[in-house]
Image (cartoon, rainbow, N blue to C red):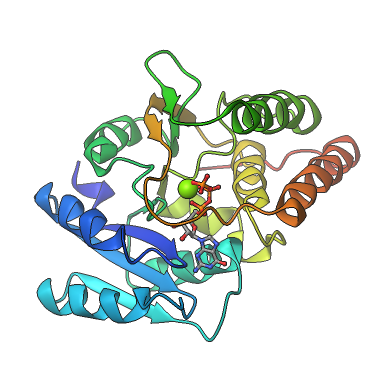
Length: 248
Ligand SMILES: Nc1nc2c(ncn2[C@@H]2O[C@H](COP(=O)(O)OP(=O)(O)OP(=O)(O)O)[C@@H](O)[C@H]2O)c(=O)[nH]1
Ligand SMILES: [Mg+2]
């Protein structure tokens, strides 16, 4: 549907030199009119320079943002979302650069977006699953990311912490993503919370999430704690304020 184009894909990178070239090639292999924004935080492994080389290889299709240091997953996304909207995006797709999110699912996300405002690539709907995680990551995701998060925030989506999403631009403008406060993956919960309270149509399509094969995880205890505290903060908001609904 033409109202969903142009589509901007945004990805944050920190030490993803082993993964980014594959991601970029697979994205443009889809032969969809996509523009990619890479936000790199001065990765010591040279991801930023590599991104520039890829941008030269796909002229006019890749924008690289270089930041001075590791400023966090959430602020990278806030910056990339603003940039995509300023460039005239009608749809913004967010995805990780570590190949855990399969670019091959983008057509399914786009198809679902035709009748939704935001589509979540979900590990927890029929057909979705996770490959390659140990028991602790499963536990953290199922109990923390799924059970506790949904209980406290009232979110209805099965997978509230998936970063593989497609948003319609008007919804992004409406939810004031620039006012989110998380530093890490809590951003994803905060965003979905804002979308649900704005009355957005939230859909899920199954994805197979594959654990990263190259590079290292950036998930830290501090980021896990931040996400846990965020859920209590959102519970407070839920109890104290009414959702703002209105014309879409
Ligand atoms: N620019 C930027 N990107 C980041 C930062 N932290 C993480 N990322 C990127 O955000 C995406 C998700 O981070 P991951 O380290 O894969 O986190 P995760 O998916 O929770 O953990 P894994 O189990 O390793 O997959 C990746 O593309 C990272 O390179 C950061 O501080 N700045
Ligand atoms: Mg990852």
